[in-house]
Image (tube, rainbow, N blue to C red; front, side, top):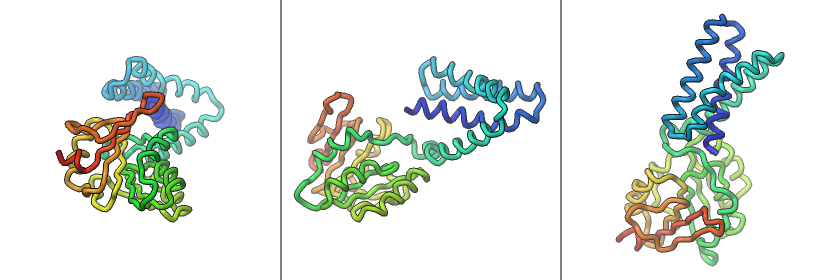
Length: 250
């Protein structure tokens, strides 16, 4: 999915360039396109994407510009692409400082989370990186006795989740960074991050989780900690790791 976002982001940037190309000389146009093609392929290489994506992103700006300049709707294409760029920026620009791209938990995994949550008692659940809120909302409908909280730092996903939360009495969405959010008030903390961040999560969970609380991690385990429970999804592309307080305190 993140590869698709990269291609669409490249297209959006190119759309802005299209708005300029109509008023520039042929020499300036060629230089601008060459620089953009080089930047696209270099960024793709630095992100360690496969070689095929390096070639695609290196040639895509030229192909899009060629098609657009031959189109009678050049200005429409340019402005539409600018709108796309703004939307993508509101979703993905915070990746530069929060280190985790927008990548929501797929709906087929909600049921697995549901199975490990308490069914006959009250609890508080934090989605530490809620995105558009798919996890809190899906679980809140099935577990009305739970209080669900989501923290999100990307502006547009936060806004979408915040508006959606108005229809739920047991869901609260706040804007912020998970590292500045204490785990102390919550009986269940859910994370879907990526391996380089799991050491920081381990340290934070050890310091802040209460004795009756647990941490749930989708996809990636905590380093040097044996989970109290590990669930493998039926399609075997999901590992859900559950860590209660005793396993974290070892």
